[in-house]
Image (cartoon, rainbow, N blue to C red; front, side, top):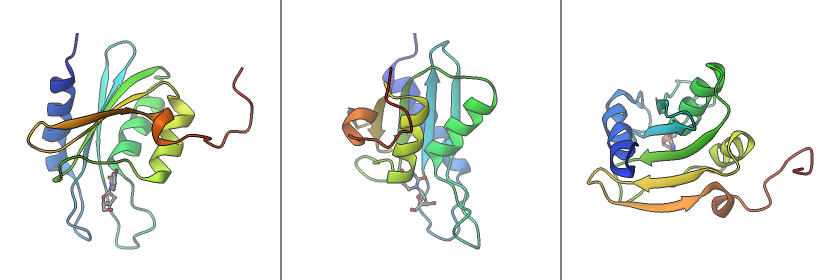
Length: 130
Ligand code: THU
């Protein structure tokens, strides 16, 4: 079984691939699927700013487009004590992983544990959860 520390380390390692020449703020994410597969992601910025994408959405879009649907845990790290997912990423994570546990970490291995339900209460959805 993958430990929290191992998932955080994958996010720390992939963060080196962030493409962030405009903000200089590199973020790494590692998403654990319920079959044990891990998809990583980094933020990828763009000169037009708007088309930029966060690390968390890179990871979950990679996973969904490869056919994964069940997700258990996401680690996200940046060069701070811990890294909070932005509002747009919270909405996207909620859509695909309403039971997701989130490890918000820094580069020294420290982290805070939360859930997508705690980060985004009253998420927008078209249908009531059945
Ligand atoms: N960013 C992420 O990738 N994830 C977050 O949780 C917060 C922000 C990125 C977006 C942008 O490329 C840079 O960090 C600065 O906002």
